[in-house]
Length: 93
Image (cartoon, rainbow, N blue to C red):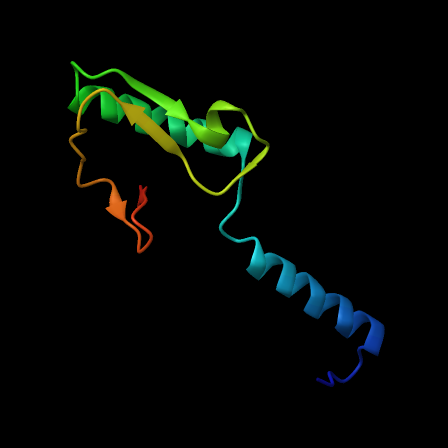
């Protein structure tokens, strides 16, 4: 690709940055996801007052970069309309 007024090195850097962003757009930093997770947890407890609900996986381990939130429970959880299914079976708000 040739963009007038931009050198080849700058064009290559822009393309590399766009590719990086595209490849990582589904990843979240733990501190940002922690805020969302708190709200999700409150909703799940409200909908399932008798259930024992715990975070598991990468979130429980406090991994700094995550691609999903995982929860386990001792009962089948009732899901809110606020949670929408994704094609891979995970639910997102």
